[in-house]
Image 1: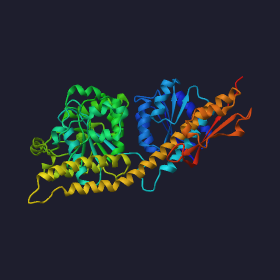
Image 2 (image 1 turned 45 degrees about the vertical axis):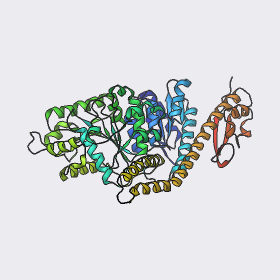
Image 3 (image 1 turned 60 degrees about the vertical axis):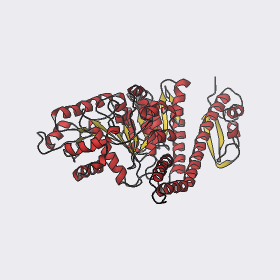
Image 4 (image 1 turned 135 degrees about the horizontal axis):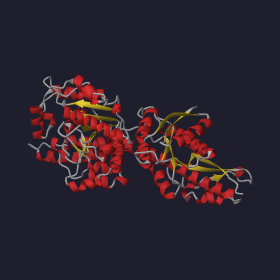
Length: 537
């Protein structure tokens, strides 16, 4: 069976050396060699490889951020990082982010072979455990669409808000989140009537320890079903929102929702660049005038210069289109320097003004507007054939449903007339939430067992490394191997007796995978880690 490998390396000499050594392994196919992290991430999502190799000097995104993002998007894929600095301070963050193996320079063929083989076996084993016939998405997560403006006033926030709201209300059981990253203006909260206390700044403060409950507490549910994560009320809180925190927030939202819409604003800022780099689709909103179209070219040149997005992977959406405009569609196609969406949004100044003043987009009754938005959504593939289901999404759904049911019960009591008790809908929501609990608990137990498999693999690898070092010094490898494994993982652990004889040159450690409770039950599976013993002179 041939396994696909994607390499991310800007150093051509190192990339050539990696390719030469991987070619010698025989059963590996190099699918792509990327020179930037954005190109690398796109190739990974497109080719779905079993193993990826990333040089930590590849930019512009840091290796830690790339590893963390890809680990969340493709949990069954193994990531190997080639480190320029082999110090523990540099290696530990990569391992914590999800790296399955570390290579140091200069490369040794035996080390490359061992790491790639182990990564391939782990990826295959995880795919067998995780894959189900009802999960066609394969853990990739939500589709992320970032809307940006060619300049201020072209309607970026209006388009992002209206299209997210329309998908949320029209597609049943489809979870849609709207993230406002226009930190200078933050118009989403002015376009839609919501009250909120927590903002993206509160989430950014705890981004290094972000979890589902934090997201659930920060998002604002709208009656349409749309969930919003909005800009802070105080301008001084913007300093907490960094490109790194934005990447983590988007990665978490990607796992919890089916669709994430981002209002990226009209200015090229570090936070906007982070969103543009991570988004599956970037749409620049413009109006049919020379000033706006120049802004399109300026943004495209900026992103291309930073190495985060090519013009051919970006789309242009024309807003405020009218037959009376001096610049028509054919001229827009020639000036935009990027693919232009075939559907343009009509000029509806007066109707949109009424919707903005009332802070209710649904008061806009012009069918041409909503038809155009849906045609645009179809062209950029906002909604897949079938939405996903995962634990994070169900947890957020349960959390927000509980909060919404409490509000409905309060409103229902105020609406009681003639002894009639309102709030039946909230009771129905509570019953549905209770009905989902067994499924949620079962999935949590399943994910816990997967985590135990990963922990067993890590401990087996550490123990094998320690045993090999002791054997190379002529000492017994067993005691050192046991010291590297916690006591509650030692049940059923062994060091292969045939591999401890002098001159054998190989040490193999077997670690039994615990079943649910480490130290109490052991499953029928075991993780084997083999290391070559290098005899000291």
